[in-house]
Every structure is written in structure tokens, then in C-alpha cells.
Image (cartoon, rainbow, N blue to C red; front, top):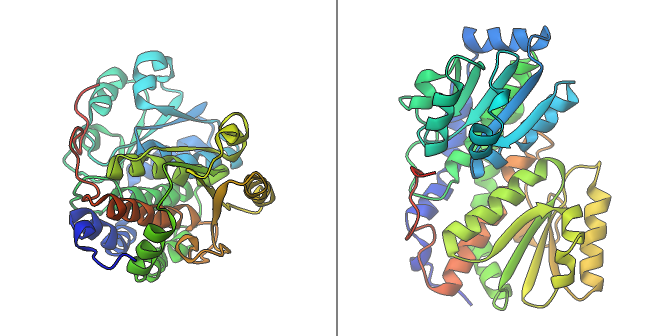
Length: 349
């Protein structure tokens, strides 16, 4: 049984445990600006043919819930990685497109190219943690997160970006900001309640996952944010193979790989496709695969998130995956989140 946590008690863990404070700081600072409200008004008067949502890594995955909400509201919303947008889809950069760009640093190589390629064309809303960054300074409207300094792997910046994007969705819909602020204000305490048991969760996971060599994270809808980001942070934190994809995509090939060395983490998600996700869970179990459900009703404690409703589910879903990164690192006897080949800000395309 794992009792010595010293190998994982570094700066990455401190960032994880600081997430409740970052969420609280961010929600308190979210205020609509005239420039943002002006763009929202233009969107709702039909002045934009499309909304292009862009980012890289976890910043890109965080856009899934906003993408779904804009489509639900009747807008044409398109998610495009910034690297593809600037080189192959630059035709989107015109006055009929509203761009929402997410980048914690606001100065990655792709964002710098976006600024250059788009200059003077499509209005741009920036969501960033860095107010003095090139992205923040050149955007037509700005939404700032208050995650503070982050050691390496995105955790504080990811959850605060999800919060900011949830709030932005309400702004763009000309919705009631006081109404959305109420559930967002619960995010800090909900995250704190889950993280209070981090040692027990990590201990349990480290014991139960001894023979796991490959991890699949699968879900649908807004849960694709956590599936994509979760696989990314496992690879970054632990040098451990993980893939994130839709539950449906898992049936189209990866299902054939099932073995005792593979673990399939299924995000329960919302009621629209919850039954489909549970069916996948059951089918993996019937084939002798190793799997668990992640959600409010999960039977395995490390994967059970607080029941806070639709608004906070995407934000809370990443917390158990963070526990996985700590458990794998503890098994390997390595410090999680310490980069050896990459850097916090990607400066080369």
C-alpha cells in the first residue's frame, strides 16, 4: 500500500490543490466589458455567419462545452485547432466570422501566427491567463482567468478556462449573468470537497492500477473536454500512454485491443447519452476488459464527482484524472508534471 507521498508532493500537486482558490478568484473577476457586449449584440443580430473556436492542447479541448452551447442557441460554431486554422482554414478570417481564441499564455507559436494572419480581418475574443500577452493586447475583447502562475501541466489554467467559457456562453447569448454566476460560484467548494480526499484517492488508484499499461478516456458531448485533456495530461505528467476519444469512436477499432493491461475510463456524461456510455461500460466488462465509470453516480470513490449539475460537470470531470496522474507517478517513482522535453509555453510550430 502506498504510504510515502513525497515523490509526488511537488509543484504540480500544489497547482492541483490550488485549483479551488483559482476558481474563486476567477469567478469573482468575471465582469462583462462594453467591447464584449458589443460583439455579443452583433452575434445575436445575425452579423456573423459563424463562430470559430480555436486553441491548442487543453485550451482546445476546453472549447467543447461552448461549442455545443452555441450550436444549441442556433449559431454555426466550428472548433478548429489553431495550427490548422492559420495554415489551412484562413479563409475563415473575414468580417463575417467571430473568433474565440483560448490560450493560457497568449504567446504560443500558433497564437502569434493567428494574430499575424488574422490582423484586421475577423473580430477576436481572447480567453487567457496572461493580460500582458500579445493575444490579450491585440484582441477586440478579452476574458481573463485568474489562475496565477502554473508550474507545468495545465490544471489551474484548464479549469478556470472552462469557467470563463461557461460565463462567456451566457454573455454571447445575452443571458442572465447573475444566474450563471450562482452555479459557477459553487465550483470552488465543489472542487475543494473532492480534493480533500486526494491522498485516499491516489492510494487506492496506485494499488488498483498496478498492471495497467494503456489508458483510454472516452465520453460524449461536453465530456469530450475532459477525455481529450485527460489523455493529454497523463502523457505530459507521467510519460504514460493514454488516448482520449468519443465513446462511439472507441467501438470503431480500439475495442479490439481490450486486455488486462488496458483500462477504459468511461465518462458518464449527461442524460442524452448516459445510457449509451453505460452500454459501452457493460460491453467492455463482458469482454473481460477493465473499466470504470466516472461521474456523479460512480461506484468507485476516486471517480465519483460532486453532483453539481450540468454547468460544473465538465470542470469537475478532470479532477479524478488528475488523481490518476498522481497515482501513476507514485507507481513509477517519479515526480509528476516535470517536463523533460517540452516546455510550459510551446514556442515552435
